[in-house]
Image (cartoon, rainbow, N blue to C red; front, side):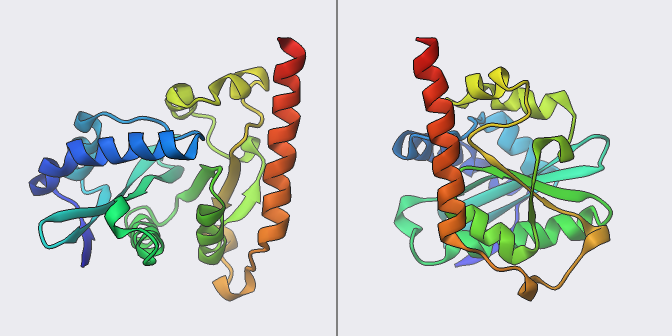
Length: 207
């Protein structure tokens, strides 16, 4: 297994990457924004993605997005093929793309929005802190990318102030040792449950 910075030669995997992301969204029943092969290829050609390969077989992927004129970057589209799950590959990919982001955009704040507890844990170990959406990029192009997510109506109703996703941010100016960051699964699970209950209750009231 190798995890490398993707380039143009990896464009042959764009289709299966998009298919894997789409299938994961169906299984999870939560928000994962859809992406087209052309978009994935652009990320590869610009050196803004990492890909995991087992020989010639696709195993995993993640890419970098820039927002607010480079003040913010996001590590998006983290996905692992079903054949390679539960072996710690996602964590390795996440670490690789984070390190690549820090090297390529050293002054940028790295942020993430996610509903996945596993991703929250990985983010915490890398030094991310939970933040409100107001502390993330105000670049409307980023938020428009959420339109393909099944929870987009929640984001609209709250005027982009909150959603089922949790916002997390790594600020290089406030860098701390990652060993000081602890992930309490019970706390994050409770937070996720409160959000779901709150927004689902509003949906029922509006029916």
